[in-house]
Length: 116
Image (tube, rainbow, N blue to C red; front, side, top):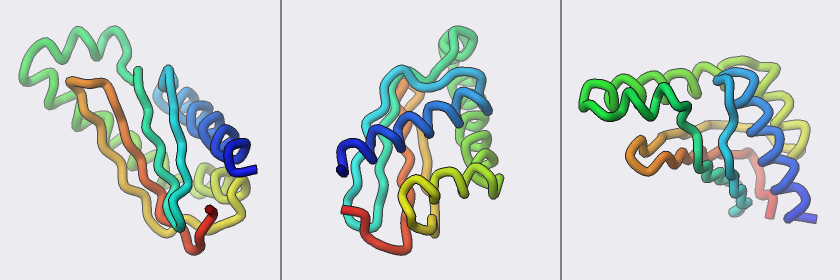
């Protein structure tokens, strides 16, 4: 049951990212750890972003844009409601960051109850 739920959550995260960012991660691994949902996403950057990160200024711009964009996505109550409906829990906090050099993003959702 948990593996299937992790897969469903990953697919929803990919769908949301694709809708808001224009492309979704190529690979997502989701794990439930007590009251946390942890998503590791690889292959996030677009071809334009890959070109931009060749310079220091470009790396900073892409990192800032990506982190701010993701935070804005989760300001939408409809997006949060979709995620909460899948896991039957309230999301209390969301932490997100991306390593531009490795093209790996991590998002941690803190819930009001344990899923695992």
